[in-house]
Length: 157
Image (cartoon, rainbow, N blue to C red; front, top):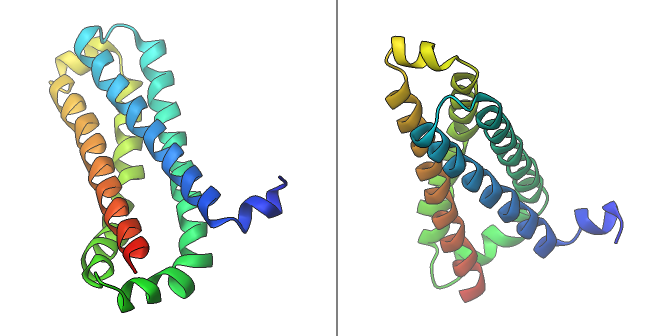
């Protein structure tokens, strides 16, 4: 399977989009654990944060390609004509705007991972760092739920 086969295979694109998103969520959950357990382990914390951002960027790119190439012309009309047109009107419209927050928030958490432990503590940023990291996870999970609703609506149609 070459790159041209991947770029024209809707299930593969959706699968890659999902895999990258799950990896991003997993890396940021791991980051939250690192923040709680031992914020002195800076190297691993930075690596996990960077891998999380890269994963979310991968999900953005693959999902965006699928959206531009296939969703608007093929999937959206099917959903709107199907049993659950609200799936596009509510879930996809929300997802189209909420996804914009993932990368900036993930980057902010990643930048915080590059601060020294003392800086996090002296400026009172450890809890903010943890909350931000968990917020990234919560937003990503909510986007996943919206994606599930949209996919289900397409299958029902």
